[in-house]
Each structure stands twice: as structure tokens, then as C-alpha cells.
Amino acid sequence: MSTSQPQGQLCIWTDTDPDPVQEADFNAWYDREHMQERVAIPGFRYARRFKATDGGPRRYLALYVTESLDVFRSDAYQRAFTEQTPWSLANFARMTDTQRRVGELTLETGDGEGVFLALFVLPQERVEAALLKPRFEAGVRQAGVHAARLFCTAPALSVSLTASKKPALPAADALVLIEGSDPEATRALAETLADGAEVRTFQMLWRMSA
Image (cartoon, rainbow, N blue to C red; front, side, top):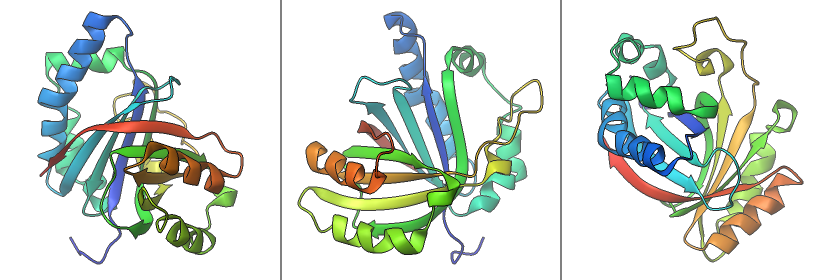
């Protein structure tokens, strides 16, 4: 695959059974099986898991970065959904209120990654990389903020691959991801950029490279 193509990204934003035993099993599965399986698919570069720090719904977020969107059209990726273990099937059944987004990392500014993440959803009519770029560049110069990313959803690739009925296409929206070492600074920049959109905050649990 051409390295000149924009990187792809899979975002799984979900919740699980709040029972402590079930939630512990969900986290063990994600950490010991699921991320390893996905990162082993050709074209996947790395994956990160986050947990919400704001007490809101959908407490868990997983971000997978790939070489390009073509990875999500590959036979290897499609095959991964037909070869599920019993542990995977049990935990997929526990996932609730899931949002699945596949798309491109359209705009990236800053250096590296941050432990703290603030995100918000932009509707399609507000997705303008040219207008966001100077705001991102100014934002990452602030102390405690290290990166700002715009992730634009590809609706046709974002539908569930395991649903029993053909699902409707999701919205052609985008996520703005602000990362930093200071949780207050990270959230403050996201709120400034969000212009009234709901901002959610997370802390990274761990990262895995291919």
C-alpha cells in the first residue's frame, strides 16, 4: 500500500455490562485477545485503549491506526469477523451503545501522543480542515497540549460487519481528538474548538504496536 495515502483509523466507542465481574472479563478480553487479533491484521500499525474520565456513557474507546483505508476492504480484515472465539462472542454480546467509525486521519498537528484525550463529534457541515488547521496549530502550542487530529468518517466502511440485518449508513461526521499531558488544558482546548458540541474526556489505558 502506498505510504502517500492518508492513514486509516477504526474507532470503537462503547460500553459494557457494569457488573464488576463482567466488566473485568471485558477488559481482560480486550487487553489479552482482541487488540492482539486486530493489530495482527496486515496493514494495522498500532492500537490504543482509553477509559472515560467524565462519568459519561460509552466509557471505553479503542483507536486503531492503519496504513490506509484499503486495510478495511482487505480479505484479511473481512476474514477476522468470521473467525471469532467464544470469548470474543461473549464480550461482543456485552457491548452496548456502540459507535463504530472507520475513516481517514485527515488533519494532524503537534508531536506524539498524550495520556489525556478530549474528543467531540463534528457534523458534516462543520468538517472543514482548512479552517481547523490554524486553530489546531495554535492550540498545540499551549502548555500541556501535544496533538490535535481530525478523523473523518467513511460511512460505507463504518457499518457493523456482524449485524444480522443490513444496517443503515452512519452519518458522514468527524471526530476531533485533542491529546495532552495536562487533562485541564486538553479539555479546555477541545471545548474552545467544539463551539458548543459535547466534549468527552478520556485517559489512555495502554498502547500496542504491530
